[in-house]
Length: 200
DNA sequence: CCCTGATTCGC
DNA sequence: GCGAATCAGG
Image (tube, rainbow, N blue to C red):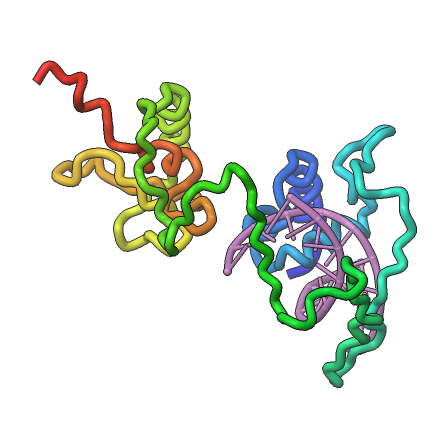
């Protein structure tokens, strides 16, 4: 694919709309996000902001970064730079590679063995109406995937009645590590509760 | 890990 | 001019 007028226009448009390079690339097809970014730069519209202040933070310093420079085939690393041993104590700690400091913090709670799933917090609060609103809101944007279309990074939150044909899975990008998208994660890990209050 | 944009540089 | 490879953050 080449950068035809149309494609460039779409690129400009989308970039202007704040779409990510990967999204643009996906839309255009035939190009990678790298290609898009490269083009964006060549077009000189790297910064989406137009007028004045744009450069956010972390700028204002030179870039003494060690660049590999010419790395045709030989895969070699520049050099880890002088190993600087951060020494804190004059002469303590004979050895012990990984010190694994034990911050004896006063607020030291109990250590959770290795489980990642956070145990239901006693101080459970009900599902925040906010979270619920968020959910119903995003469910409109849901990709409505079928079981078969789910992947490891699509939200697996089911919506609707499985017995109906009005059933689908959210499908939005999951919150890293979790099975659901952000909105659903918020409502998924509810400490069970709101049961006691039931009339019966 | 996934995703972002930024840069460099051989083609 | 192009974009993969790489870098640097989040």
